[in-house]
Image (cartoon, rainbow, N blue to C red; front, side):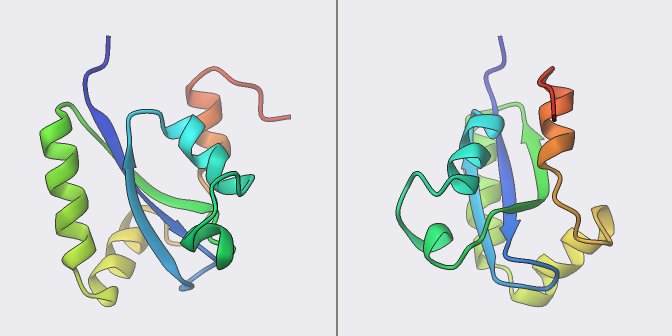
Length: 104
């Protein structure tokens, strides 16, 4: 059983508004953002494209990394995204496929 979690970055579009979060259920949490099922910052500003994520094997590390990224300036965050996802593609379908879900 997995005991860690994910730190993720959502964007409204390429170089758009960013949101950093963490979760133990990446598929479910991103689904919530995409369907705007939780009112707040991401639903208000249409921030629902998963542009970056990373796995941490311990929840403590996940929380520390989330806090670290939230303190970074915008340029550092954008550079991190571009290193892994230069076209700012929505990675949600990749996550779904990797978890065994159909993307159709």
